Image (cartoon, rainbow, N blue to C red; front, side, top):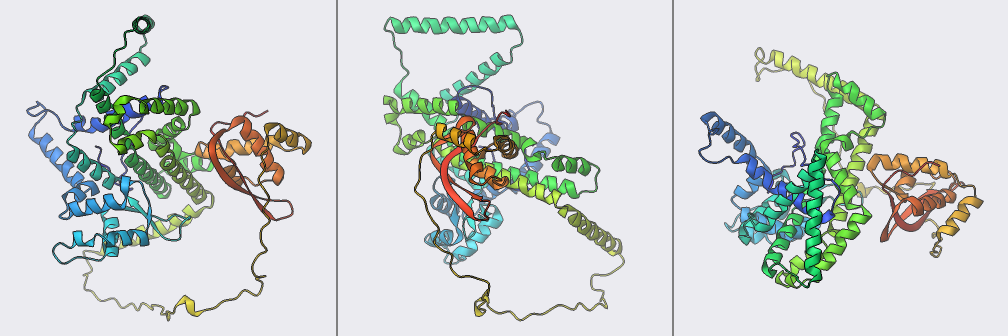
Length: 537
């Protein structure tokens, strides 16, 4: 288990996943397995090693002192850690749900007796606020909800997974995990081999092994592993998959840390800020070019690859039909059935955070707001320098002959005021809703031809919006680029989507546009996502 801490001022580099071509399930599980075990191997040399000198021990002790300040360590060592972990695990089952403040406080209220075993304690809202300060909970302002939303932090996810591993008493040094490591070593060695003769000999050896297996099957020889061994291998893979939920939370924190670091560089007096400003003004996605941005983009593209997804889901369906899956618990079988579908929503949330951070950073630069921040920062540093210069000469108890005139205002409730806008025409008329109809590709093509729709301009709009976030839906394009031809632009985007976009089966989205008469319209269309640039004809 990798310990993580949501502290933007000290961002840690995100782990790098393998995005080489291959099976989705094989790549995701094997890579996560190696990541889960790597920190333990790197941070714990053998006892009695020649490198175990006093200064090395002292440095390691200092490093552990730093780790002790992280939220994961503080949570595990807290006096009421059993009660806090039990409540958080119950309030957020699976560690992936979001709750509003009122709902969260109400749920914590039902378990206050676990926190008040000594007869004293704080209220549920006070506990929630303290857990946010300690880093056990992450607070988010979601524009889709009226109240503040809360979710478990990556540190809490790590702590719960660590406790669960102690409770299950399942060793990590299993045969199946060793096989995953060996398979990935073998695959990496094959893909990076530069000697053509060696690579050809290896392919011939693999072909001979496959042909021998075909002959054995043709002669009726079918050898299957033990059911218990197969179940253990599947549990290891599911354990690796379950750890991805904490990774998504850490992705969001790391992206925010990169965004904060870029803003600090823009405001810094160093010469490097000019290069960053030039890149941002040129439209470069510095968030996407960061290590965490590249890692997530590779993972997200792999997750949305139709061929990979279909092949992975087919493998899962075949596994569910195997007899050895009866040795699994009901929760394990449900997790296996939804192992990939459960990744789409948190991955999309990370992409939304990345897109919003990019837009906010671009507005910060293009609106010249950073100049005002820089002036304010210079004034603060100047005042701080003057204060430090006088700190040894002026006593802290020295009286200043300065009268600060603090403005006073009488506070009253907003509900006492009843404001009325004289230009308000009243309630709007009821919106006209039309029945949904299905348009075929032929009908869309005919509409594009007969209405002289600007497909060239729409192609440029799709490619510009898609380059910002890695993918774009029809609604994303319309939000960023206005529909210059009204409904005709929407029809043109639908036509391009049927040819060059990937449809999310069973999903729809509501798109809006403004017609040439100035009225706003909306329609529900199938969810299409442009994953690559549309060719310019």
